[in-house]
Image (cartoon, rainbow, N blue to C red; front, side, top):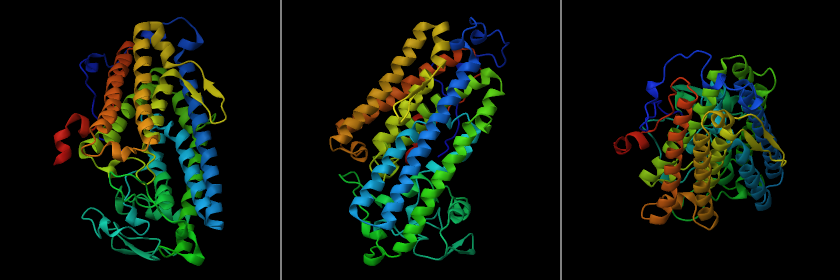
Length: 434
């Protein structure tokens, strides 16, 4: 979710950068080569965005097909296939998250597809350990799948049809509560896995396939659960189609960058890198859960896929700098990059940044090795797991460290100061426990 914006200060003071600079700044004074043309760098950034969202759409469509198969013939095989398709869909999508920060069109849209955490009792049945009410959310256990009428802000609402329009227009963030996440990857994840009731012990969610079997129904309301899942899956496809359109030639997101000040466009790229790296990924998605040793703070908490989501966020940050993306079909989209701009001005800094970006990816891969070896991410952040905690902390440290170098890039390119996303878990950890 959105974090409070703060200006990251890692020793060097970006505030010392002058607010307005003439067009004879470093990146404009470079020789007239394609790789050091800021407009060419912005075009590559947009081309890669399009490729990533296209791949996200392709994998979402494959997930939709798998959902259809599960609903048509519920079995362990079709449920497992849908789960596998969901995990595959996360790989390209997580690499797009670097586009969220700095691009208002993406940030305004993102909550529809990747909002978390969610109060899953809004959607379906939950274990008694979940509780029955919340001071913050009147819909904490509304269970819309079981109830054809719910109450929102004191008004009775017809929930007899769990359509795309109902999920997105009525249920999503109902009552202006961000935890009422009714759409997107994580709502689908919950419907495929169910709650992970294992704490920091082994095991993910274990929803039975019979939750979709009308003839041998478990959990009740199997027909409505299938209706909800299908609507959420169709909606994810539609939302991704919208974002693909935004990055095509003439699309709103691409046009906003192409028609704008090239310096501002380069700042957008660096804003995405620094904000995702520091406040969002290192802070809200990793350090917070590690401080609290709380499995509820992991990103893909139902499926135990968090290690993969974190890894591909880090890959997306690295590739935004290098301007290179390997598509799901094996082809590569690449071109003039921020790395080219930095290399032309300060080769040593370029080497430093590239090295730190590779280091953070390597630290994320170490988390993945532990996860694939049998110790899931929620176990790694568990209290008393010294080695697991250290592995996660090493990745956090690498992300914080690379943000320092991203700040140095901002200064080297003589761009206006950038306010990266911050996080109390990094900036004021004492507040986390209040």
